[in-house]
Length: 119
Image (cartoon, rainbow, N blue to C red):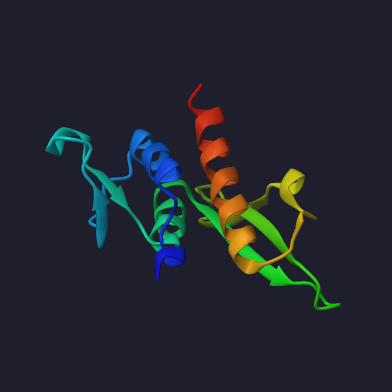
């Protein structure tokens, strides 16, 4: 069951970015002020979709070996009165040995994207 949860170090980064959703697991670092919510991967990915419009896709490669990631950003275009997709092409083409490895790498990239936007 532990593999369903985001690793602690990434949960800390999520908290720094403003993640404050209720989670099934948390870690208390001596007092409630330092309580770190440990989300499921699906909660973290949903939070990035809802808060930042960042969507993820993970695909098993056609040859059955490895998993690739595609990140997309969606924003509402007032002029066209519709949601518009903006691909983030520099994140295409990474191949990971397992789905779990791809999830971890994807979450790290999402955090990196938001951290770089806030600098």
